[in-house]
Image (cartoon, rainbow, N blue to C red; front, side, top):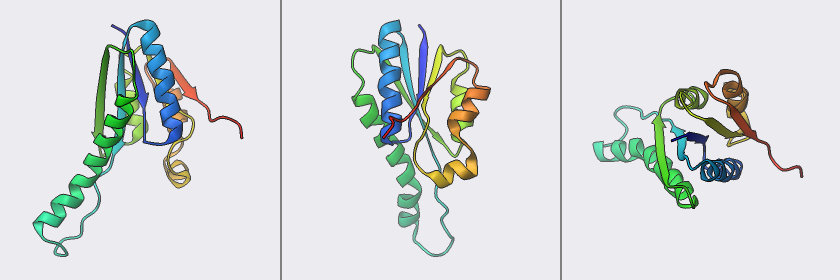
Length: 143
C-alpha cells in the first residue's frame, strides 16, 4: 500500500496540505500519515512543584495530539490514517525521515511563524531538496 505523508503544524495552510494529501491517498487507495513536530518547553529548576512541572512538560504533547486528532478527523474516504507526534526534532528532518519509502510527501509552503522560518529556514525548501520521495508543496492562495 502506498504511503502519502503530510506535515502539519495546525495552521490553515497545513490544513490545505492535509486535504490535498488525503485526496491523493483516496485516489491511490493508499495510507495517509499525518506528522507534526513539537518541542518540550524549558522549565527552570526550583521555581515550581513537581505537578506544575509535569503539566508544563505535557502541554506541548497534548497540543500536538489535539492538532493530529482534529486534522485526522477531517479526513474522509481514506482507509488507513496514521498520526505521528514527533518530539524535539527539526520539522524538516522529521518529515525527511518519514519520507523514506513513501510514495509522496506533502507540505504547505507556509506554516506557523515567520521568525521560525527565518531561523530554521523553510521546511518546504529543505524537504524539497532532501526528501526520499516526490514532494508536493501546496502554495498559499494569492490574496
